[in-house]
Structures are given as structure tokens and as C-alpha cells.
Length: 214
Image (tube, rainbow, N blue to C red; front, side, top):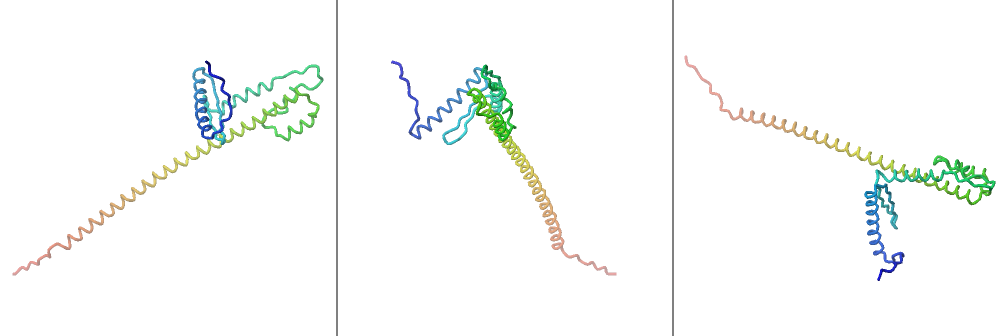
């Protein structure tokens, strides 16, 4: 007899749920790695745990580049013109300039929407507009992530530089201490030699005066 279909549902037991998450997460990352190697494809994987902890995998140089590639591909698809015939309304491509890039402010978008009278748009046009706004939102989030990554990279480089400067200062301090100890040792040797010479003079027998009788 074949195995029955297992019904997927949330695991109520907290410990079992955490164990399952850990095992399935590791298995998913392993499968993603195998897929990238066996099929020579680029794979990006993002997992957020129930507590908000981030787990990620990237087969390329960085996950940011994978997301950027996805964003470019998605933008190209959204920018493709979709004709609407016989309706007498604006073609959705006329709205493509509305969300042309992440540099456009929301106030500008809002003013253009009001000028175009959004209430006169049909479902197709509203769907296209929604996709464009969603694209702008993803671009904004992508830009935010990039800035955060750049900031983190800068902090890491700064920490590395400070660590190198610290090691250099410790080396210089050690050399100065060594030089100082050497000078103190030489000075002590000189004082010891001088003291020995003085003791030798004190312990020498008195000179006898020779009287010459004539």
C-alpha cells in the first residue's frame, strides 16, 4: 500500500516546530546549493524565522547582486506595453512614466495621480499602476538594503583599519619599552663598574714612604 497524503499544518509543539524548522532549513539550503552546482544556475534564498532572524544563501558573489538582477528583469517585464483596444481609455503604457525610478518622490506620484483622475481608470489600468507602484516600493527597499550593506562594509573596513593601527601602536610601544629597558640596563652596568672601581681603590694597601739615608 502506498503512503497516504500527509496533511501540512502548523506544528503546535514549540520544540518540535523549532527542530523541524532547523532541519528543513538546512535541507532547503543544501538543495539550493546542489541545484546551483548541478545545473550551473544562480540561486538566491532568503528565510526569516518566526523570531525574525535572517538566513540566506547565494550561489553567486552576493545576494544583493541576485536581487538586483531580479529587479532589473522584473522592471523590464513591467515596462512591456500592454495594449487596450476599443475602450477609449489611456493605454497602461502611458502610466509608465509615473513610477520611472526610485528617485521619484511619493508626493510627485500623488500629484500626477490626481492630475490623471485615477477614478476614471479601469481594472487593467489600475492593475498596471499597482505593479508600477509595487516596483517603486521594491526599488526603494532594494536601495535601502544596498545603503545598509554599504554602511556595514564601511564599518567593517573602519574596524579593520583601527585594528591595524592598534597593532602598530602596540608594536611601537613594545619597541620603546625594550629600548628603555636596554638603556636602563646599560646605565646600571656603568654604575656597577664605577662602584667596583671605587671599592678597589679603597681596599688597596697604603703606600710606604721610602726614606733614603744619606
